[in-house]
Length: 280
View 1 (cartoon, rainbow, N blue to C red):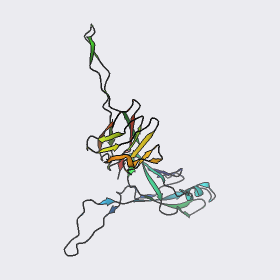
View 2 (tube, helix red, strand yellow):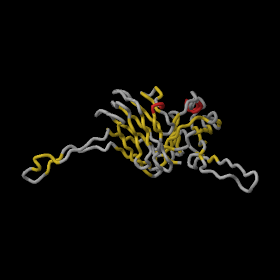
View 3 (cartoon, rainbow, N blue to C red):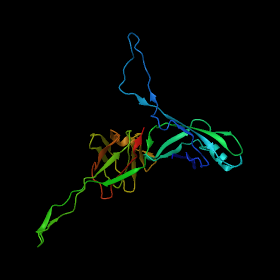
View 4 (cartoon, rainbow, N blue to C red):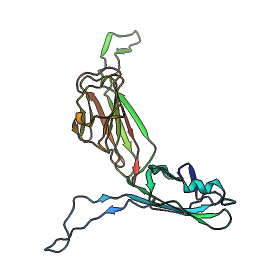
């Protein structure tokens, strides 16, 4: 069974549902390809390219609104989907891989075609400018690296056990992506750092470096996909980036991330990384 949700409404392939799904075009296919061909003016064929990019995903869902009369609020709720024009989440559930979500806007007004009594056909057309379908959010956090202890004296107890000091911390998190599309993590840094911080992908060698004090109680959010840097979610902090080698978590892979202070940081300094697996 397939289920979709948008605007507080739930649609289903279950024939007993009040909002049914007949077709769901554009969801299961790959994202459109922006294949622009420039022919060679004085030779056969066309100029080559290093990469062909994907375009926006267009999704068209059709089905039935099943009600007793045309006065049923379900009709008006459907017609009012995304009435404010702002993007919203479109969610689809299948047994494999479960719930996936995509951000959409209307491509056209929701269309209702009255049939008999309160039953009507409908057409819902959506456009997703980011064509990747995302799974559940995964969050991992770490503090700054800290040294561990060594053997402590006395070296052992009568039973022969050795005493060790505190366990150290590498200041690393591992981000994984089980999907088929590269995805871009969001990092939030909080806690006092007197000269900024670095976020490094160990696997790729890419570095994001922020050269400015992070006061206690302040957060710095770095969105790897958009390149935005926000201080306390409001002020633009991108000018303080001295290295902006934003990196993705590869499809079907992982990325080990190192968090470190440029100068000195306190024990409350924390990096929180958020990533969602993505599918084409």
